[in-house]
Image (tube, rainbow, N blue to C red; front, top):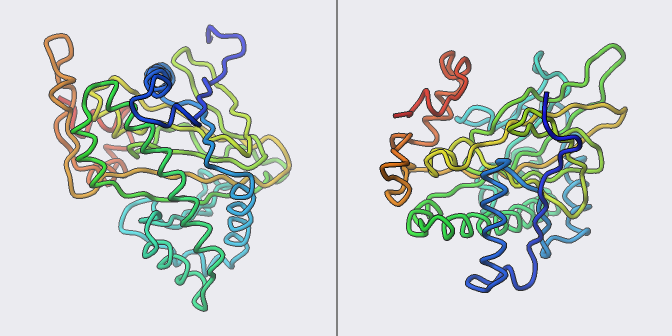
Length: 313
C-alpha cells in the first residue's frame, strides 16, 4: 500500500529569469529540479519557448506518419535495439513507435523523412527538427542545473559534447473488445534523460518510491522530464530513474513523443566530486550503447537493475 492519498508530480516552470544562468531564480529553480529528480526521478515542466502552435503541428505530423502503410514504416531500422520501428509486439499489442536518430541535426531528420517519403516531406522534416531542437534546449537547461548543483559542470560539458538525441514518435491504438489496456509494461528508460510530451489522451503513469501510481494528466504546454538509467550511473545513484507505464483506459488513440538523450563514443563515469567515504563509487565507467545492447540480452532482461548488473561495483 502506498502512503499518499492523491500523489502528484512536482511541476517546474522554465521561463524568464530562471532561464538566466547565475541568477537567483536560476539557482532556486536548480534546487527544485534536483529535489524533484532525487525524490521522484522525474517532474512535470512547462517551457516558455514552446508554443501551442508547435504542439498542434508536431501531433499533426505524428498522425501523418502513422497513416503510412506498415510496409513503409518497417523500413525505419537501427543497429540499436528499439531505436527504429517497433510494432505488433504480442506483449504490447497497442504500441507502435518509430525513431529518428540524431534528431537535432538536419541530416538525421532528413534521412528519416526521405526514407519514409522518398519524394520528400518538407513540412514533416522542418517540424520534427524544430521540435527536437526546442526540447533538447530544455534538456540542456535541466542538466546544467543538475551539474551546477552537484558541482560537476566539467563532467557535464564532456557529456554534452558526446550527446545524441533520439526522437521517438509513438501511437497507442485503442483496445479492442476484451483486450486489456496495457500500452507499455512498467520499465525505466535506458536513456540518460527522457522528455515526454503527450497529446490530450491520458495513459502515462509514474510509480512513486512509496509504491503509488501517479496518473500524469497531459497538457499542450507541459512535458515530463525523466531520468534514465544512465543518469543514475553518472550521479552515483543520487538520481534514480522512475518506473513508468502506459495504460489506455478510454476508446481514443493516444499519441506521444519522447526525446531520449544518449552518450556516444565517450564512457560515462561517476565524477570524482560525487565519491567520498560516505558515497563510495557504485558504478564502473560504462559505454552507453553497449549497455543498451546488454539490456536486450537474457541476463539484462531478467535483472532487477540492469545497470548494476552491467557495471555495478
